[in-house]
Image 1 (spheres, rainbow, N blue to C red):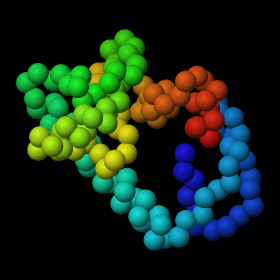
Image 2 (image 1 turned 120 degrees about the vertical axis):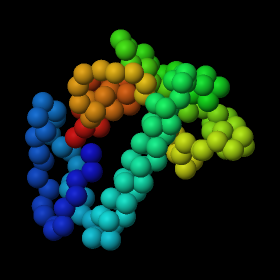
Image 3 (image 1 turned 180 degrees about the horizontal axis):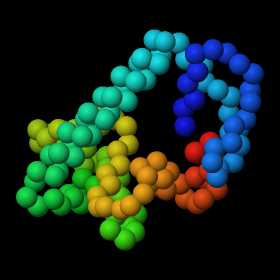
Image 4 (image 1 turned 90 degrees about the vertical axis):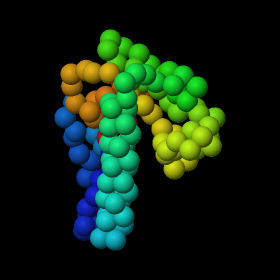
Length: 135
């Protein structure tokens, strides 16, 4: 979680719903830094929406096992991580690269709930780890 604040203040832990107290100080960003982070987030969202639309428009709607490594599967949801050799092969074959050198995760399927809970579950081994990352 990224805490954005325009003014400086003393450290005050915050309660976050059912999660533990936040052990981190607030992050003070300059307006330029905040704009840069917002631009980066918008770029990530745009890129991933384009990839999603490409996947949804395909007739097979299947995941290439040479490009994606299965991570987790539960009920109707599957999570994959991008194989390094898969990203290189996609770029070499003229397909769009999926990222800018950063590890990519692909989630396929449907489930009820909040996106935040899904993301914390994907990157956390257990409930305690999820709570620390959520704070």
